[in-house]
Image (cartoon, rainbow, N blue to C red):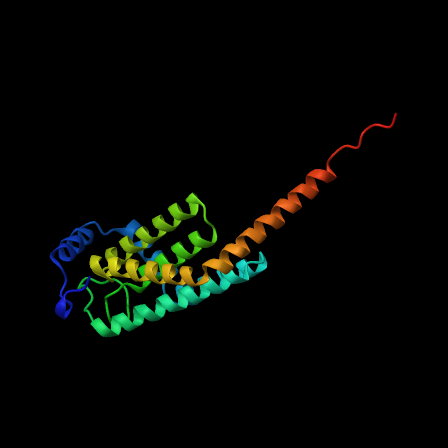
Length: 203
């Protein structure tokens, strides 16, 4: 999604101009919050580690490993591509960012987290939340002028692609672990139901 020489597409420039015109206090707060959440120490280290710890607590070690590996691999691929393309960022940037605009690391991270969690917790509501989070992250990156729109599309494809490839690698142990957890929950619920059964009255 990056042109030769790193030049933006026409739709990139039009999108950037439109967002610059609607900047304001509310949008700035939203953008800065998403910037903190999706990158730096919080996005690259805190969120993956805390999520992995929670998964370990609920006895999902394979899910924790998958999540950590996917997060690390996505970040690595993004950095390799950034250094390969060395695309310049938009001129009206509001935040300090590293070198290389393509692809967006924040969006790549968001897409990886969203898809990995949807794999681990396979419910429709998780897919919806993940999609919403990724789209909002993409909007925030272009709003802040940190990326061109095509950078965010590239980040989405990289993040989702990494999560999908690693899902294929971890699919068998993840499914086995998920079914084992469901069996434990079912057995626990059956025990609780049995404990609340009123014994028959003595004749």
